[in-house]
Every structure is written in structure tokens, then in C-alpha cells.
Length: 82
Image 1 (cartoon, rainbow, N blue to C red):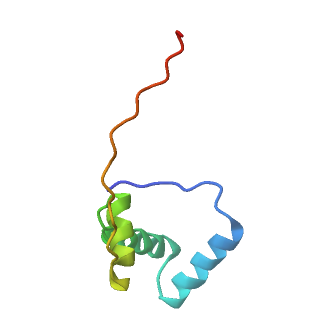
Image 2 (image 1 turned 180 degrees about the horizontal axis):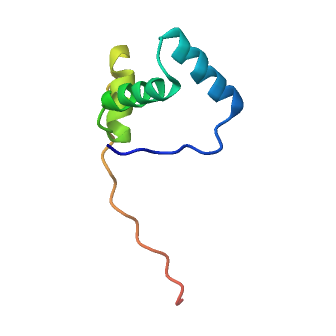
């Protein structure tokens, strides 16, 4: 099995880990393993496009009909040679 070393751990974080490990009747090392295992076991949802995320967010509110006006012919560009 592999092992890792975590340097520069904040004292408050280490204390919290120690308290949580004691609460769960485990060593700090075992508690850290369990935290990592549980954190990595939960798969994150696949990322969606921005448009899909917006659609999902606002779908419960219903939709609106957008009126698309017909385009007019493009005007002639200005002439600068006269």
C-alpha cells in the first residue's frame, strides 16, 4: 500500500481531525483515510454546458415565447470614393 505525508497542516485542522477521530474511536490516520475514501467515493456529476445548466435552473419556472422578427435585407455599404 502507498503512503502520503501531508506537510504544513494547520494546527486547528489537525486538532479537529484528532477530535473527530477520537469521537469515532479511530486513530487520526484511520480517520484521514476514511475522510479521503468517502470524499473520493462520491462521484461528481458530469459537467454540463452553461446553456444546459441555465435551462435546468430555470425550467421549473416555465418558458416564454420569443418573437423572432424577420431580417431585412442588408443595406448597401457606404462609398468613400466619391
